[in-house]
Image 1: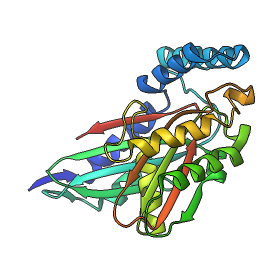
Image 2: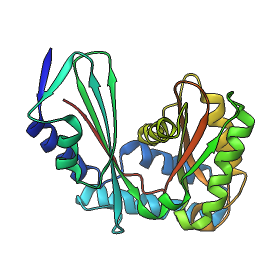
Image 3: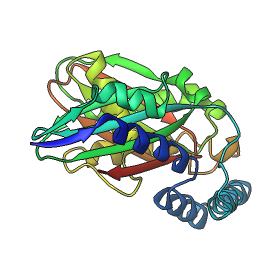
Length: 249
């Protein structure tokens, strides 16, 4: 049995919160690819400006976005590991802040993987939770994901990253949508890749575009996660200023 100490976990969460102020390389690549393929000139210029701003912030070591952000911490603790000196949740709250949203799960092994997300406070207003009929209809789910993006419009600072979680309870679905947001933008779910593709196509068909300027890139990515019975669909939005950092202890 491997032991992690609460002070060590709190220090790691605090360090990750500082590192998460910059855009990760996979998000920069998504912006670059979107700019290269965008045919609408104003939208293409906006995407290029977003990328240049993110690159400057990254290399200058300063926060990407000056607006207040919500902190979320995802922790995957191995089943052959334990926490001493307090609970895992207490340690994470101490390091990331008492108001941080926590999503903790047990996984095989003896490690501890942490991811800190800084989420735009404005985007939280457009989070949705939809009951499902007990089966996953990809067409309906993609439409609901697109509805969330349409409702948010330009208020969520598109292009967006959308996380979809499908679970047996509202809490499970919300935790899964947070896990989906935490995934790198260049990864696809082995079992839900068709839903991810269909939903991204539906969101981009809205033609809201970067900063509401039109074009084909309203979404940089749609990530989906599912566990258990498909009873609820949770959709969360993140603006183009993706801020994330991870570490395995």
